[in-house]
Image (tube, rainbow, N blue to C red; front, top):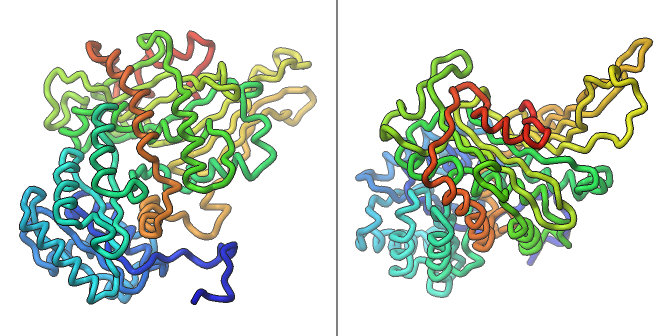
Length: 505
């Protein structure tokens, strides 16, 4: 019997999953230690996990539960967003289990199945299990086939729901994405597949929808009549770290542009959904992805770059070719910029400039809506020299917030107009800190809410945008830029040809 005092419209009470297990494949890897385990602790600390919740780690290591608990303890304490409470951790780790194994070993997966069967009875989780693939993409098919062989993915056989969470990149081109989608959907029911893009878990990204559809102030001017252009930037001040093998095989476009930035573009460009039902939201995003047009001449409408040695934040930075384990003469791009269009009535003629780069001057991800200038300015030209485009800037990270930039008179006897900014910051406007993206997404997986997870059609359509770029770039060398610069000079020239400049992020 439900709570008679609670209604479906009451948003004050938190959503809490049914009793369930979370199986993390690759639990000893970076993603698990830096993001997943801290997210699980923070959820527990906020009282958002159900009684009997179980975490099962599976990795290629000869560890017992005690060693796994030590690793998890260090990871959670280092990465936790919420205050550390030893009593919460002790309750949580009493339900931690580790199954050592290899992905190609049938006996190891049989042991995993036995462990989950025991936990189903002991913890009352009734077969509810989410499998998190914190593993290299090349291992996806192997693990999926093992889950299929053992029946671990079969809802009917296990007596509860079974869900799978797959990290990006989902494939390396359109064809591989289609094949992987077919494999995943054959092993799990399509509605039980969660393709994660952690950017969609960020509060500032979700706020794009609130900003647009909860306010009458913005939506009337959110179209080609008033918008001059849109710039989406994801800049990182770091290099490739320990990801040399993966990064050199993928590059900036496959690593980030195909997923994070095209998802941001879809949220900016989509029409208002009839409701926030997951299917309605994804349907509107898919329409935008299908309407994306590439530049007629990719060689002039896109730029790829690779960083040289330089200085970032006052420290010496090596060039990409000097990074450990990068092949000499590699032509992999660490910077990509492209001019995209959206071929529909709302956005016809509005360029969407999208760029991503490593070893930039600072870390920032933002979406800038640049509005057209007023059709007539009844001022002396000298009085408006400092007046630029009105801008609405959504800062995704860091310093999360929204900036509205517009012209205002400078105090004094003359009518001098220059740009000023109204700045809203999450940290100042709200007393509660924003949950980390993985907190929200892990909770949504356990609840079964797929709103923030791209579906197979979105993934495949995104690759249809990227594949022609990769084909056009295949026999070219990236443009050089020094570490600490905002990308190659050719990127500035690409906008200059159309009378525009990159916004200074």
